[in-house]
Amino acid sequence: MEIKQEDNGKKGKFYIDIEGKQEAEMTYTYAGSNKIIIDHTEVGEKLKGQGVGYKLVEASVQFMRKNNIVAIPLCPFATAVFKKKHEYSDRLA
Figure 1 (cartoon, rainbow, N blue to C red):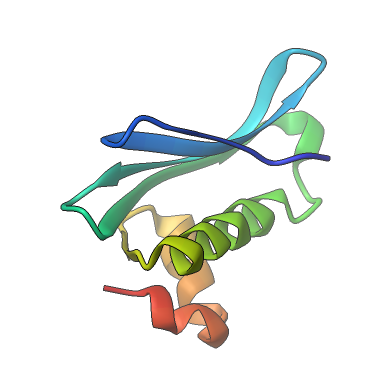
Figure 2: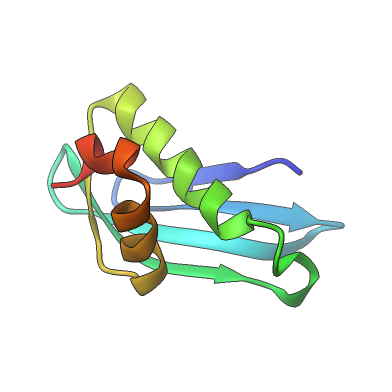
């Protein structure tokens, strides 16, 4: 299962496609040059219960660390993951 990313410098998403159909995504919007707002996470029925939402957040943390970006998680799911995973706290705005 490959997590892909699209980013146009204003908005972006991490997502998973299965057979050409997007089955999971986590979207974000830039708030300045080094900050993103994580605004939505959704996992389709095919992938529910497999930890895919966590994997999307983990991919975003890796991206943020690589690019020296911090996040404001407004999405309730992402907020819960950041609270649970203390090792991600370095990426919180």
